[in-house]
Length: 112
Image 1 (cartoon, one colour):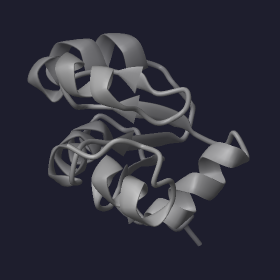
Image 2 (image 1 turned 180 degrees about the vertical axis):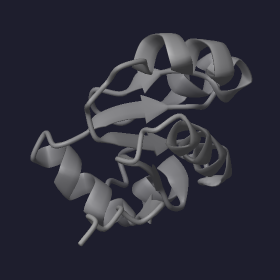
Image 3 (image 1 turned 180 degrees about the horizontal axis):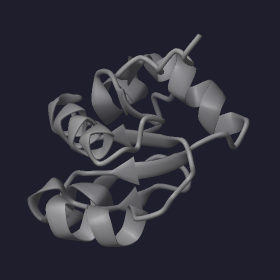
């Protein structure tokens, strides 16, 4: 029986648990000015605007489980679909983005 693939999205609570357990590589697909405002712990910046080139270069051959996020979850969903098309079946988008993280997990994270 083939292995079940992971859901395309995870909740912010699931993301919090994965980050706390160090079970994911965290990829932020927002732009540099947004990254400067706030970010998740250990996040790597790979802006969606340059994702096709940078994403391939930075993530090529990665066997890590990837947690991708943005501001509200739309850009990260596109990036996750792109990564899965490249064979990164362990890539997942954080539903609601860092805005949901701020309201549901850590209110000290600035909202913008």
